Length: 183
Image 1 (cartoon, rainbow, N blue to C red):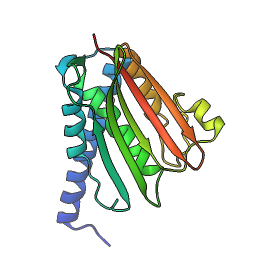
Image 2 (image 1 turned 120 degrees about the vertical axis):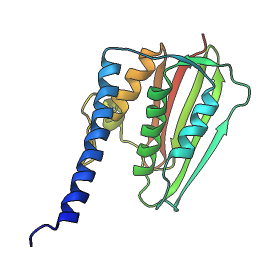
Image 3 (image 1 turned 45 degrees about the vertical axis):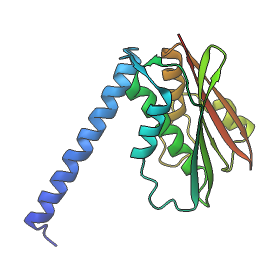
Image 4 (image 1 turned 45 degrees about the horizontal axis):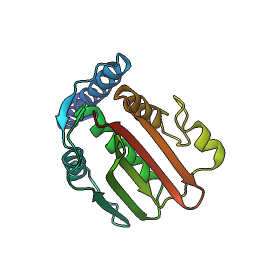
């Protein structure tokens, strides 16, 4: 059937919207690849709360999301857009690891000279080989995955002078922890 004028208008609007989204993603990766952090003094708990409030958990009624945010954390210098992307990415991964439901816990804490931001799920977990390759660029276990997610998380952690840790056991879930230096 021939496309109607309103169909073309709608399709064009969707196309422009997706191009804008992709342009934003590409710019973010380009900035990170050049290690151009735009640091600001931030309260990590406020950043996590904001990201979680913007996340769409619709259709995920079988997944419980909780946050355990340690009060009175020191303010840190970080790039809020990039660290927000880390939180979004980790929460998205956690959801995808639990197609039949489960729970996700986002936590912050003081860990010596670092602040810890962790996302823990009760999903299917990773086998040893997957754990070993999880941070490699372009490695993915998903049919439509890009393999950029955890590699991106690691790059952001290192760009901030921090690190990332991964704990995962098959059938028991996964915990990814981002460590950001306090000073």
